[in-house]
Length: 134
Image 1: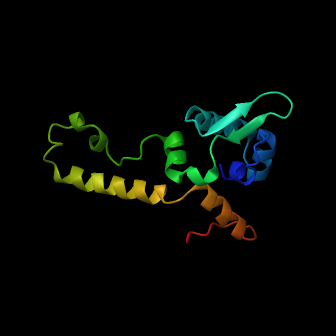
Image 2 (image 1 turned 180 degrees about the horizontal axis):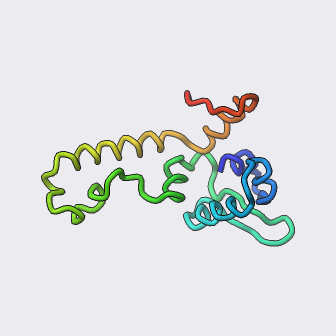
């Protein structure tokens, strides 16, 4: 997604170019991109000049949206989302703790946008690290 954000100029980016820049296989990248497409974060076009592109501006895409589209829900335990999962869910103190943990994780991931990550990576391109003070 950072690669797409850095190349966000309205034209699709070729999978083979992204795979080469990121050092991953085209096949693996295709699987990731299909999940991101299903989530509505990227679009694809076939043929000459085809490839993948962001659907929205990188500043409006959060890290949480990306992770949830690839990994699913980020709730730490099942009963946080589904009370019927546990008969004691309504009065369970541990569930309240896990709900707070889940909210904190969601808030932290929502505080980072794809645009910020791309800019941060640009700043640290020499050492290939990620600046966390965004």
